[in-house]
Length: 422
Ligand code: CTP
Image (cartoon, rainbow, N blue to C red; front, top):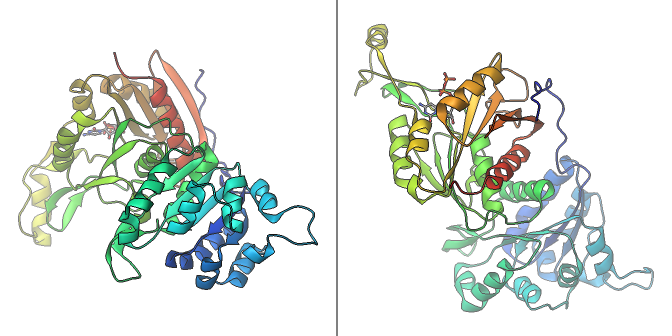
């Protein structure tokens, strides 16, 4: 495809704008977090309606949800009315483009998996053909009980469902353990991913290793050479792959993203290029694909100091020289296990495309996503990005301005389409 220069910063629409989202809330104490999620969805331009089970209605205020969603809330008593020509569960099921089922209690899970429609929420779940993000939450012992475990396992095989298992932490019953519902930011991310990509788990069976964020090279314990990377692009790539069914390891430098975006990933924090190199050495052999989104600091001080330097000694210490950090991506390409595909990234300014082509040839990876860092709405910390995707046989695809999550999905599709190396 012919390469065109990416356009100037364009307003990129939020993928949730105008989407009809049904928020289905069942009886777990995590229900108290849902008003914030509903409010966030409305602020992002989604149309929202809420349906509550009787237990959820005891935990969270239906009038508050009605006010936040700007729509009446559906309760069990509303299911059949002589004033309505259509049953409410069918009306809601067909209205929804996307469903957020959160929290998903043990009882609602059992009803759904066993095909019971003995409440409004349960009937909506059976009747809807929309994809569902389902976020379980309950006490640890309940979560680990054989019946719940079996039902959760059965749900994994449902089409159109993105199951979000609970994380471990302090529960409202004062127990430390598995059972906490995915945080609101993780629910919003899963919905955004569903709106962009759908529920298909085409990465199932794959093991993706992602690096993200900056590295730091320390001159002394108080000063380092680094860069403004926040890790957003790499973390969203990792999450998009997880939501598409991959097992994901994320090696990351210091991040500036919502910690909820790390849920469900196997995280390996590092600071320096040497630590990144060591972790890559450990994890590369197990991965079917690798995405090197980390912004590696290119030089390290030749003589790092163990103690903090006096201000007056700084100039001399910096003049003592710098060593180049080895090119990790080149090394990864040269030592990859059979079949492994590798995606590199390139931060470019000025005439980015020509430099990116040279970099692609030098690094030898299968795909290289080059993005400008000197345009508004692209590069470090921005919520959107754009650029060029370079691939085999001089392929160069212009990546139009889009949210970083949307670009993450495009990159995953391109990587998977290559198939394993032969
Ligand atoms: N990279 C790497 N090891 C380094 C430097 C970069 O593995 N020592 C990887 C990055 O993770 C990225 C790609 O190489 O996937 C390109 O990084 P970039 O910073 O754009 O390029 P550099 O190789 O550092 O070249 P330059 O700074 O001259 O543009």
